[in-house]
Structures are given as C-alpha cells and as structure tokens.
Length: 201
Image (cartoon, rainbow, N blue to C red; front, top):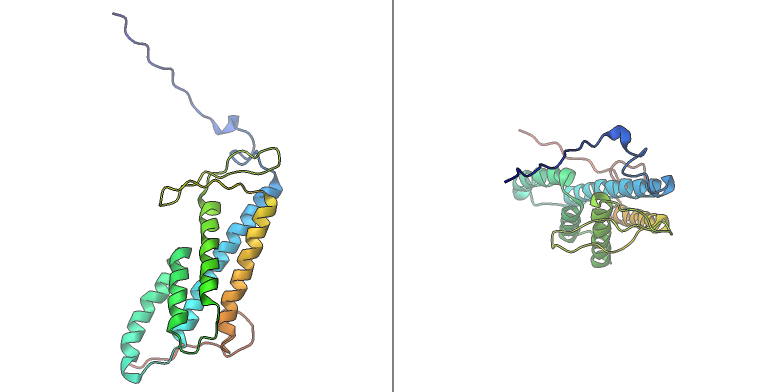
C-alpha cells in the first residue's frame, strides 16, 4: 500500500503582497472617510465620559450621604474612562435621569440615536473590509453578539454621513451639560466650571 503523499507547505511573504495590503482595493479617500468616522466615535466616547462626570459631579447630596456617594462615584468615573460605547450610553442615561436639574427634554430620543450610532460604530471599527463593487461600496464582514450578520454596504458618502451624525450627537451630549449653566469639561465654552470639592481627613 503506497504511503499517502503529504500536501506541500507554503509560505506567505509580506514582500509578495500588494502595497497597502489588505487595504489596497479601496481608494485613499474611502480609508480617510473611514478613519475620520472611527476617530469621531472615539471622541464621542470621551464626550460621554465627561458628561457622566458632569452629571454625577454636580448633583447635590445630603451631608450624611456625601461620603457614601463619593465612594460610589470614583468607580463610576473609572468605568467612564474604559467602558465601551454601549455601556457609556447606559451610564449617561442613568446620570441624566438622576440629576434633579437636568434640562434635556428629549433624552429618550437622544439615547435611541446614540444606540443606533453605536451599532454603526461596532461595524465600522470591528468589521473586516471586503473588496468594493464597481461603485466603490463594500459590505464589511461583521457578526454581532446575537450572531446577526451585517449586510449593509458602505461607500465614502455614507461614511461621511455617519461621521456627520456622530458630530451632531457629540453636540447634543455637550449641550445637555452646558444648558444647565455648567462649562463642559475640557472646553473653553460658557458656563460655570465644574470643580471637585476638597475632602477633609
């Protein structure tokens, strides 16, 4: 009985691949648009973290509850620095609802818009980009935690639209703080700066 011949091995060498592989099939303008929208989502996460700080740090507490609230506040701020967008949206919603002086009137609508944006963010940041069609559109390979497969195609115009929408959400979140008369943290905008009270002991 003849010994079965083993398959021949192969080596994939970076030098043999096209320049800018695996991104070589899309033009530079497409990748610029994608990079800008991904960077905008990163900024949205930062803004949500600062808004959470603002809403939780400007609430008035009874004197006897200050120590306990401060102990709870620190871990919540640490999470705001590292949580993914979906968790930040939930924390932001809770912080706004818990603030007695919040002035935002369309919170539920804003949260819904933020969650829609988060869906796009996950696809755009974690999808594997396939070759474009003749019109420059591509469907990224992306499967969410519910095993749902993404089927929508993106082109440069849609990426720019998603980026512009994320900017509108950033402005809405910042306004939710500034409308109460507080200066949004890290900005030079109008309003009273938010300062942490010094603790004794």
